[in-house]
Amino acid sequence: MSTVKEYEMPEQVRRLTLDEMKQFLWGAATRLRGQIDATGYKEYIFPLLFFKRISDVFDEQFNDYAAEGGVEYANMQAEDFAIKIPEGAHWRDVRAVTENVGQRLVEAFIAIEQANPGVHTDGRVVGGLEGIFGPKDIWTNKAKMPDHIITSLIEDFSVHNLSIAACPADEMGQAYEYLIGKFADDAGNTAQEFYTNRTVVTLMAEILQPKPGESIYDPTCGSGGMLVKCLDYLREKGEPWQGVKVFGQEINALTSAIARMNLYLNGVEDFSIVREDTLRRPAFVDGSHLRTFDVVLANPPYSIKAWDREAFANDPWGRNFLGTPPQGRADYAFLQHIIASMDSKTGRCAILFPHGVLFRDEEKEMRKKLIESDVLDAVIGLGPNLFFNSPMEACIIICDKNKPLERKGKVLMINAVNLVVRKNAESYLTNEHIETILSAYQNYCDQEGLSKVCVNQDIKDGNLNISLYAHKSEDITTADLDTAIMEWKEIHNTVKDNYSILLSQMNNG
Image (cartoon, rainbow, N blue to C red; front, side):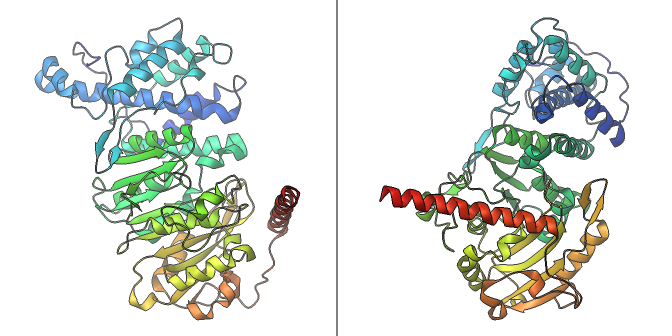
């Protein structure tokens, strides 16, 4: 099984700085400029990064055992490595090839995936590398990716040792997240499917405060950044994080593979990431019910129109307890899925949405039922441009299945719209902003211009527009021009869609 047949004294490993890692990874990616469109970088760079990392970690583990008890002993131990690399499928095996390099790379990918199946336990598949390298045909299309380009990429990655000694898991994870952000910047709107503003994710994790041994779930997990950030929360506080069970679902095949790589590169092994449509076919079930989790966090796709509304209206999992959302906006379908996925005693969630979900008239009755259910704990209004490549203002909806006594029958409104910084065409929350918002959430009291505790009965007609409750006296509640134009366009498109549906029904009638 082992690809290392003889023990060779390893070279002295030099610890890479995080900046070196970032520069090195992005430098490799830019080699693809002119060869493929920027939106396709991730399809090539992430698999190569993962392949190089697991090969170097394999060597590192093997050499440690060989130094301890000899090569035969190391070969025995290699059978129990977390990731096994079959003979002939190591990085150096592919690097030695000079012809049909793409085909040889694909063969190595397939061999590694087959040698590392997931473990079936607790009604789920844990870990495993099936499909983790993504689509294979992209490597064998010589017109698009000739041998000399693949060879150049392999040589770029061969410059540095990517073992744990050279790049510990937390720093590798940070470099990986950096690369995701760079791809998002370079690729434009198409990157939105796997990129969420990391400072907002940090805030969400701080609010949810995951605990050792809990389960964490993201039903629209993208690249897995939210799941990783929850584990970072524990790691940064010195809490044990290895016992946390991680669950994610993602409809896009490549993005779900990227999420699995992300978790592995961050040192996480107990995870289940399933590629599937969450609304159509939820992946985690317990008999006739959805499986429930301690912590749920998500940034669902914004107001998708292509979803099976009719099926959701008769949902076998009972996820339409607030009602069936309009065809043009599936936001409240995801919200109901998330609430249904929360543990009845420990379940809590944080969901990133556009502000419109708080006051759009077509969802008013669902909001009323949400407030009446008393699972809504807080609504946090964030500033503009925190959605990637969108000027819209964002909000975070916090729900708790077991609200403390002092919070029952109430909703905390936090107006943090002005707590945002924009620099170098990027908007983000500073550490001070995060601390201010977190303190307001934890203190749970009225603070002029920042927060307001609202009794459920006082929330007017199901309207959760934060500016109606928590605002400064000089605040002007009108939206900025970009936001107003975008919201007008969306309303216009919704009216057009509904009108077309009406005409079709009349003609068919």
